[in-house]
Length: 127
View: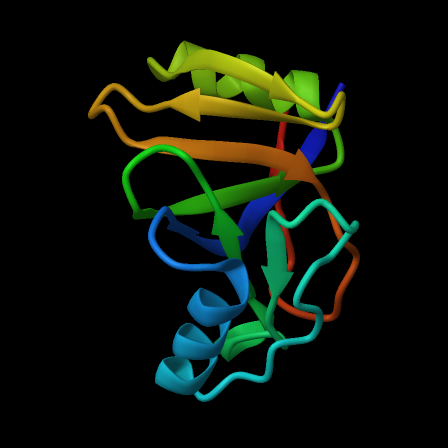
């Protein structure tokens, strides 16, 4: 069975300061409007307007050191996770019963998330 995936965007993980302060800084730094200072009401996520090329950019409040990570979106989470595992990635944590945090062989963390339909770049098709 085939599935599709593509780069979804970048998540800016912030440990210091409040979510609002971090979102305001990055919104001004990137010249992107903050769409919601508390998406889902959990005090964790602050999405921006779409970035260049329609990429999703979001500020996330975290307890680990601040960093930037990328998201890969797919129409079949399990198939994409298995494809990435064959390339050497490891599963780290299944979050909110919706997406996987993974670790690349290089040690970088990234997420595999459900695909959002948009008119940007066509996704890759994998068999």
